[in-house]
Image (cartoon, rainbow, N blue to C red; front, side):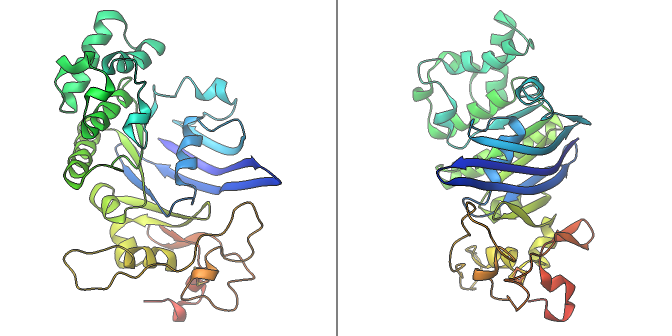
Length: 320
Ligand code: SF4
């Protein structure tokens, strides 16, 4: 349904360019939930903003984003805007930022419907109330303002707004950030139920591996603007073929286990400078002589499983 091919994003920054997304590629199938995982600054949010055509003017984009075979980036804003909200919709990080504080929540759910000719007037207002009911909010609250909603309700309303035009693909950018644990669980359950019931495909952006494991069947792990590894969640968890994936799992607290949580030392490389060799080599506990001088290629390492690490060329050295 959605095919991303060789996506590149650069930002103009003082003194040069920052290469934020570098050759990202993946396919998303109807009804599938896929996670985009990694630390802050690894290119996850930039990738999905590029799919929506919502990057700032300082950004340059290359590559192809095929939606049912049509390249939505081919003619810039002219080709992407008919699909934004209509076919691909987004739940933004921090629901308060998604709403205009001086307009009612219902009127903001109606806006994309009217803009795309999905519904108007009373029919659109009725649909907005139905969408609120669908996410667990009484439709009678459609005429309330965002500040009259709790954080969890605002996030639910943001999901209702994203569903206003019955999109095929939902992009959810850290949708549970800043919510307490109980509300986080409710929002994740809601996303799973809605995607199942409506047959929606979803890309969930998060740094939180347990969230991806709970919600998604497959994930792409991003590092320094590139996909470092991708595959089914079970495979990534039990047989990671990139040390970054393994170290990310080891850095995740397990409330039921006795294993110590290990942090990943150092920080990701600056993307406004040339990165030589494997971008993870200064932090990698398995690096060897080849790593600082030669960049590993993303290649198949199993069934629906790809990784970009030289260790996969030398099976004897695969870290456990
Ligand atoms: Fe570590 Fe080398 Fe693999 Fe990069 S290529 S992840 S530095 S072992």
